[in-house]
Image (cartoon, rainbow, N blue to C red; front, side):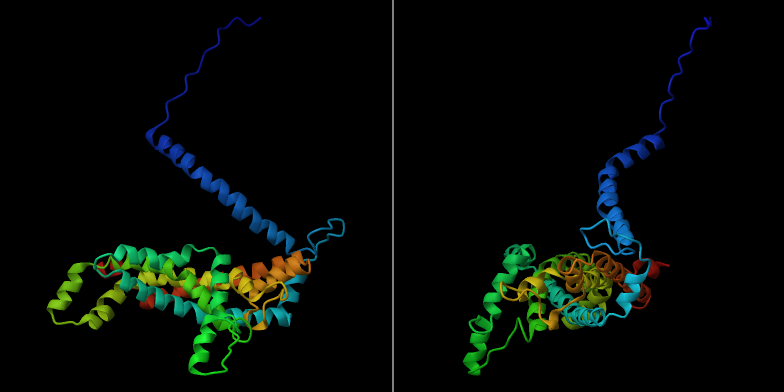
Length: 314
């Protein structure tokens, strides 16, 4: 029988770097767990589903199809049409949103009495739920009884523009741009308030007018913010679904008109309309690849037009 007394090992105290590392992972763990469960896992699961014939219900007939869904997507005329409409949507929405958000931020940056109230009012459209936004705009854009057509009819009798049917692309663009102006204004406003006052005052002392100050000082200093807004707006434009769908459908019309039949609407129809989950997931992964490629392309162009103070100091 072993009678040797056991030796109790004392744990070594953690070093300062180890304590800081443990604290860091403790604080970041909620975000990390959420990122893995709500982003990484769904993306990986979707990629696996895109390689099968999964229909959302019957697991007994599930089998691996490889890249068949992707090959089918490249030859699908509907995919080509909806992608083209999405490109047109982005080309129409993104510049309008960027320009109007910037101009709104310039107005909100003025040092006048009560400007805080105006900033709040300008931001309100961004917090309105999509359903309330759409129903409000439907009152304005309805073909027969809408306020906008009533104004047009006053100047030109008999005018009845189908803002949510024939001209749905332009009507829905107005909704989407108006809805995003507040959020875009806040980001631009933060950038405008970061422009050094000394540069503006020095230019004005040298005789520069407001337009010259804007062109030669404010805009160059704002290019990093414009770049950020451009990237985020581009990603959001390709993912647009809710506003076009709600604005152009009702109890009698279950599918949006072809003019606003965007890529994400087609994905929604493929998955929930006809039950082609595998094919719909393949379309989503193709969209991810396209967005990533366009984002990389935009990042490659920033060296030519984005002002960097670090580069100037070097």
